[in-house]
Image (cartoon, rainbow, N blue to C red; front, side, top):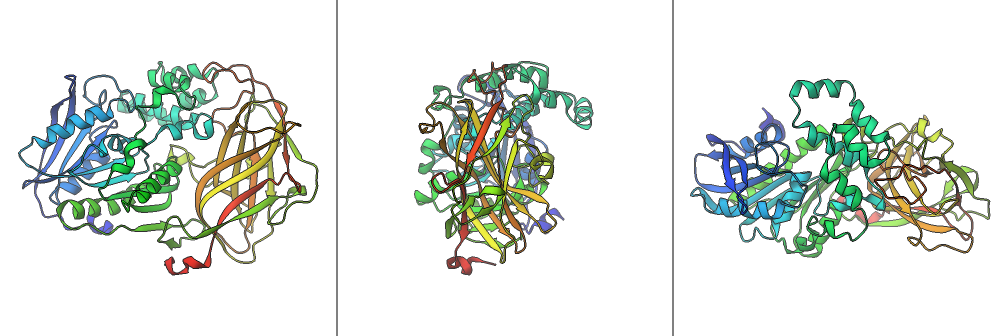
Length: 538
């Protein structure tokens, strides 16, 4: 029934499952592995995961194996029976290459390899993709990236919600099932307390009951160019991957900007990857359905014959129209912040700046957006957020016609603060005729001495990249831009002191100014679709 609902290729193979196989890494560590074997020799699909070999991985194993593909599901080092300690990213290349060597020695393996990875699994596969030639014939990369540092320190701040939630999730995998369900039903109070706790170096202890080594390292190794990350990002060899790649992404996913960077690198290298983007968050059920609907036929096709041609299939938000090109043909269009809270395409007249106070002891909260847990993610009513005194808003007039925006979004905010250490958060919202404001995309940048040029009076022009967009603002709706000093706990609050990330406990409030005049032209630049893409609509 599931196969029919997803339109998957016919399943006509009986399968056998061998569980808990021992794959020996070069240092002697045993990596526990399950093998889903169809009733014939053939190509293989590799899934390396820290999340266990059951549930989603088992379902994918069965769906592929009944269609003639051998599936090898392996627990990453230090997880679910595999030896060693789980240390994110650092072992994935060596362990992955050793697994490829094991695979090539199997009598049933015929030399063609596919890989499917969701989230961290995808990063583990990018670690070995360039080394998997000539076997590698297909890659399915779902809400993932080859460079995970970009997510961890988005805007050179610290993605607290995502990192601490992931830390807690990994630690919870060792907790008995019933105890875990009790914690979830209580609303994860320890995780919530961890978000609020200072110093951050104790947040893992509060959230999980123990000190987590990688969380401590990520707090310490936040500087751009830190040597720690050199062997933990895999974008340096991404252009060497020539196998067909299918990417599945979500507009409200934590990895979207970095995943689209990967798409661009592969495209410029001539790999012609496929791309599917939909209205999904990182853990939404629709995302997993899209993974099966896209990924299974892609793997079966490319591993057993002629696979599907490269394609782009983007479903917009606001109205579920589809487009078939990325990047789309669009024109960056400035929406200037105006005095009195207006927003328009005209440059603002000379006017006084708007002001607010950011107090890290009462940090501006994050509402919806791209976070790890689905029920906290995605579009949300921003009314309560916009009512706060520490959130400034500028709103346009009702649109006379639909406005479609597809592509990268950025804001240029002329601002100053009474402290040199501060954050600039910018959010674009869609306000419906009833006045409900829902977030579409956003971004945050950390300001510190020397990071942005400063004028004599202390004013900086701060460029804030927002999440990419694919959205229809309907006629009668209005655009709204928010500017504030943070979005906690999605990003760790800026204490205003410049203290080390993990050690800061002193909190200093700051007076903030946002300028909008004929010289200091604060604006959001929206990629407005051009008429040239009319033929890509469906």
